[in-house]
Length: 234
Ligand code: HEC
Ligand code: HEC
View 1 (tube, helix red, strand yellow):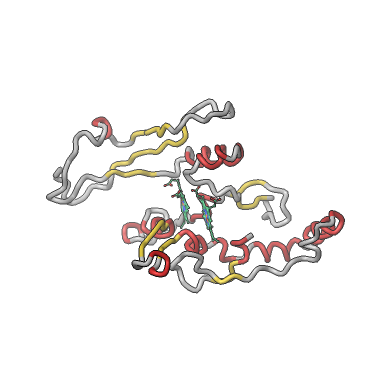
View 2 (tube, rainbow, N blue to C red):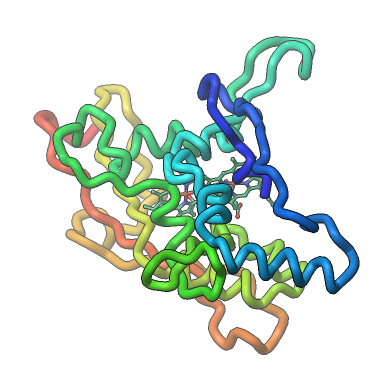
C-alpha cells in the first residue's frame, strides 16, 4: 500500500524522494473482528468510486513515481565519502528507446511506461477494477527468479518467466566507433557478427522442483545497431 499513499514527488533524486499522505481509512479498516472486517469490505463494494479514487491517484500511472525508489544514490552521510550513483532504472528507461524522451526518438509519440511492462492489466474481481474488470498486476516481475524459487512462490516464478519470455528485452550490439577500440574476436560468437536478427536463449539454473520442465528462462532478440556514419571496424 506504500505506493498508493504517495501524494507528490518534490524531486526525482530518488531514495524515497516522495511525500506521503495515505488515504483515510474506511470504517473498520483496521478491525480484527471478522464481522467488522466484513462490514468494511461491504462498504468498499457499496461505494467503489471512493476506493478507486483513494487507490488510483493519477500519479500512480506516471513513471516518475517509480523514480522515487528505483533511482538510488549514496551520500556522504551514508558512506563517509561523497555522492555515489547506484541502481537507476528510471534513468535507464529515460535513456532507452521506450521513454521516447531521448534525442534519437524524441518525435515518436508512443511511450511504453514502466507500468506497461511491469504491471500489465489482468482480470480481477476487485472493486477498483476498470469497466473491463481488470486491474494492474502487482507481481512486479523483473529478472529475479532466485527469490521466488527460494520462497517456493510458484505464482511469482511463473509470472517472472512469462515476463522474461515476452519479447520485452532488446539487445543491440554496436560496432566500436573509437579509433583505439580493441576488438576481441573471442568475445562474440562469430555467427552473431553479421546476423540480422538472432534469437539467443539464456539458460538459467535448472529449477529444483518439478513445476517447470524446461530450464529456459529468458530469450532475447539481437538487432544490429542502426548504421553509423563511420562503420570502420576498429
Ligand atoms: C516506495 C518505494 C517504491 C516505489 C514507489 C516503487 N517500487 Fe518497485 N520495488 C521497491 C522495493 C523495496 C522492491 C524490492 C521488493 C522485494 O524484493 O521484495 C521493489 C521491486 C520492484 C521490482 C522487482 C525487481 C526484481 O529484481 O525482481 C520491479 C520490477 C519494480 N519494483 C518495479 C516498479 C515500478 C514499475 C514502479 C512504479 C510503478 C515501482 N517499482 C515503484 C520499492 C518501490
Ligand atoms: C519495455 C519494457 C520495460 C519497461 C518500459 C521498463 N522495464 Fe524494467 N525491466 C524490463 C525487463 C525485461 C527487465 C529484466 C531484464 C533486466 O533486468 O534488465 C526489467 C528489470 C527491471 C528491474 C529489476 C532490475 C534489477 O537490477 O534486478 C526493475 C527494478 C525495473 N525493471 C524497474 C523499471 C522502472 C522503474 C521502469 C520505468 C522507469 C521500467 N522498469 C521500465 C522491462 C521494462
